[in-house]
Image (tube, rainbow, N blue to C red):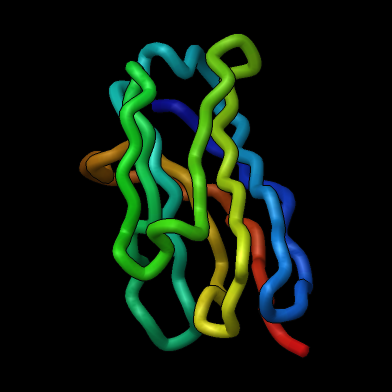
Length: 116
């Protein structure tokens, strides 16, 4: 099973930007689609963005127009560029396969806090 390691989170003011990175332990081309997910305190984990092996992307309505997702097949990495961040974007962000496989293995995630 592919392992994922997230990084790049931090504290940012509303309206700011961050880029998250997701490193995979194996060949990213072996994964049909990779997605970013997030979980805010007291809430369920939700899907944020997905990118297919072919480069097709899709986004949750809450982030559409503000976030972009990309992948580097040579570096086995996926990125999430987050612009115009809002306090409601505050959450721990995770990457994983899409759809989530049975018995998924989750990384430690990376915390994004949007606050003035």
